[in-house]
Image 1 (tube, rainbow, N blue to C red):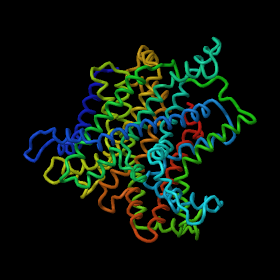
Image 2 (cartoon, rainbow, N blue to C red; image 1 turned 30 degrees about the vertical axis):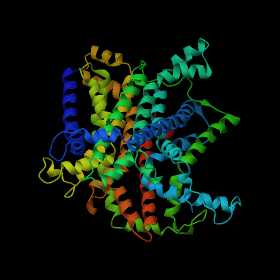
Image 3 (cartoon, rainbow, N blue to C red; image 1 turned 135 degrees about the horizontal axis):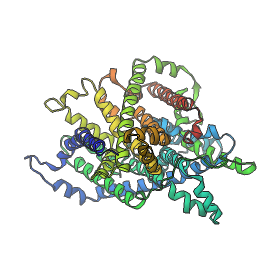
Image 4 (cartoon, one colour; image 1 turned 90 degrees about the vertical axis):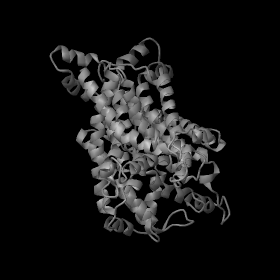
Length: 564
């Protein structure tokens, strides 16, 4: 590839991240390392690292991320293999529903989770109705085992990230390699662990890295479970005293360093090897049709996991259709009036249009920058290219709450970026924030595609007179389209449902995105919870239609979207 192009991408990325990632983080971090006299000090960091509460929070965050990633992998990998290799009843429908957890922001799902698992929720009411416990009995399911509960909730929310990357990677495998293994007597699970798993390792690493760092820095689910013994919640509570408490700033530095370290270790252990195929192939004879008990077992696997994963969504839908729900299995007084009120409220219609604008523009930015970054990292030999890989992952290591406060800090009156002050108009900062925070999804997905596509295809085109960049767009990009769709879907979906940046940066009602509108509605007394749930259902429906529309444009069912 052209060294000039690689240098342009390298320099442009450094400038972009310096302005909109490093600088806002610096505005936050300097509060933890600059004392009242303006001198550098490590006293706050030293006090933090000697405090068992903060150290315990870091340990819990690491274990929580590890447990969540393990659970998500155990959920996603079997589903991906079954989906890629077999045909079974209701496959297309269930394959679509697997991705449902992506279309609900965690704090909206909290409405459904609390309604189902709360002390006076649906589950306790069902147990009483079945006669297993006396009337008046309650049990705090959310507080019984907070650590395990958070890990399970996160795993069922995040497993689609691994699933998308695993399915895309499985679709890239040249069937001749597996057939050769069978001819040599390597079959069953041995073939999977010896041949298939190493071939899809880049995709699993791509998805697993995102899940791990997301879970390590997650705030919303821990707050729902009132679990304060993790670093993200400690930062959140500390930010309430942002003007006079230096420890949250120092804690952000420790979390950032820890996330980068964990990523580097994972990269060294699991991400260095890649196996390139000559072309993206399809399996000989296509997917195998299952019959009898095996077919329905595959259906039951998908249906069972999907049901558990969409319980929060079902809870939100039930709240949206009710006017009262307390200490009963199902809500009383079902009504559709909440949906009418949600769309008729002066907060909602502009919010939907705003979210669509913010998310669409940020996704286009992510695709352009993500493809360029991944290409330079995987294909070029330019010195320091791994720096780009680390830069692309860093946004996931910083909680959105902290980054949003950084944007507020750097855009205050008298600062260099004061023209971006979100009090006047947050549009540019919201688009930049969405782009920065969702860029890793596109980079990791695109990099996995480049790793699995042999460079010899581009070299052959160049030998026939095709310029390097043209060869990339004519040859490689179509071959990794599945990976780009995976990354683009994730970037767009999560940008539409971004919480932290939206709640903090959107301060005028005219610029509210969907999540800020839902939050404001939820704060209203009376029927606010029900209208907020109805808007959440509208948001889910909108994103569901968006994903379905993409399948129509591609001419494929969503369950086979990566079989290119």
